[in-house]
Every structure is written in structure tokens, then in C-alpha cells.
Length: 306
Image 1: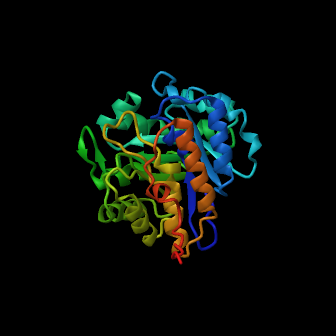
Image 2 (image 1 turned 90 degrees about the vertical axis):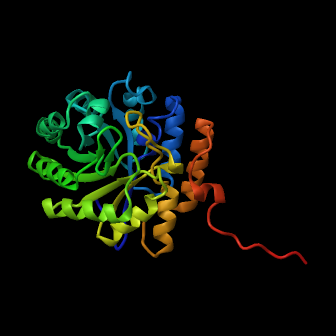
Image 3 (image 1 turned 45 degrees about the vertical axis):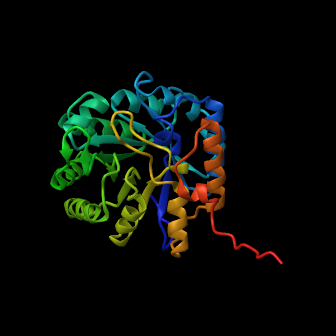
């Protein structure tokens, strides 16, 4: 992960996390959305996941999407995988930057991938070996880092322990995920501090959902702690089909608006991101949750009538 000078690095996850819980749309529509997102200036896009089409039918066309990614050489694309089979599919499709999710709770892990949290941790090393053999990069995302819809609150020390073991098993990058959107700024600070203490040499990322309206506050709290890598989804799309109650991600345009207005560079054009959000709503035929989108973007002074 590279960070703009004196700024932050935002990964767009709309084509993966944003679409996985929606009705399937044609591959051509996804490529149209990716094209609009690439025009925003975003440097990284999580473009799909290589998982069971039965589990996530909206992303059943992962290989078809991957076949067209050379159209945007300025963007670094990545994909999510849930196991060794997904890794092999992704590598065969030409994607070598992969994210592997480990749930911090057994309840969500079994619902999401059909195995325990410990079994998922045990797979990190063979997943890393496959990715590294192909010259790729592996990011481990610790999901359910704050609360589980099945098991309740996640102990912060559990998140830190998984992070430590992930690095020992070959993870190149680490992210922490508030999968169901229950975190608050104080809890974000607690978990991130513990993870940093466990893996002080790692550059951490943060994946936030805005289910309870805390997403931007959590992102700002993380920024003040030195976090510079954030996931966000165009229009606030997103949600996990295996985590009841999970709302959408923090909206890319809102995160960009917040940082840029504070003088923190993102490298992303907020107006182009709003254009992409409008397109996403049109393609999905659904209203999106972004407050900035509903407001129409930046405030425009009203001229008083004569």
C-alpha cells in the first residue's frame, strides 16, 4: 500500500463489498461502474471476490470481470478470497493482490466460510505460500473485530492475537474490519492500539461500515492515531450476507469530502466520485445511503432574488 504525501490512501471496495449483497447485475454494468470509479483518481479498487457462486451469486462473474482489468492500468486491482480454491482461481485470472478474511469469532466464521476462526487462521500460511509463489501480495483482514452478530462483543486481545499470528504466517498487509458497523471512536482506538502493539512493524488498514452512523467519526479517530489506509464504498453500498444487521460501508465520497475539506489529500475527485455513485444507484435501480449524495455534493451559495 502506498500513501499520498501528507495524505491518506483510500481503497474503493464498491465492486466487491458494495455489490455482494445486491441483486446480480450484468458484467457489462460492473465494467461501466469500474470505469467511472477509475475516473475518480482512486489508486486501488477491490474489484470482486473468488468465492462460491452459490454463496455470492452477485459476484459469480469474477473471471469475466478480471479479464477486462487491463483497460485501467493506472489502478491497482485486488480481489477477496475465502480459501485455497479461491486463491487458485484469482491467480489464474491474473489477480495477484489478494485479501483473505479471518473472522475473529467462531459464530461469524462458520456462517461466512463454514469453518472455525482457528481453522481460518491455520489456512493463512498455505494461502500466503500460493500468493507469494505467484509473486503476489497477501492482505489478511481481521473481520468482526468489534462485535459478532452471533457471539457478541469481540475481545480486543483476540483481534491483536490474530494479527500477530497472521504476520507470522506470511501476511504482507493487515486490515481490521468493523464488519457489522458497531464500533465507536473510543473502541476503534482501543483495538487499533492493541493491534499496533502486537505488530508494530505493520502498516494497518481499516474497513468500516456505517450501520449506526459512526463510520466517519471512527475513520477520523483512526486517522488521529496514525492510520492512513481506509476502505470505502461508492454511495455507501455494502453489507455482508452472512452477518445479520450489517449495513453499508462508509461512502467513498463522504470520506473523501471529510479528508479533503480538512486539508488531507486523497488523490480522489469528490465530484467524479458523486458521478460514480449516481451511476451505481442507476445500475442497481435503488437509492443509495450516502448523505453527501442526497445533499448534491458540496454546498453551492444561493443567489438572492432581486
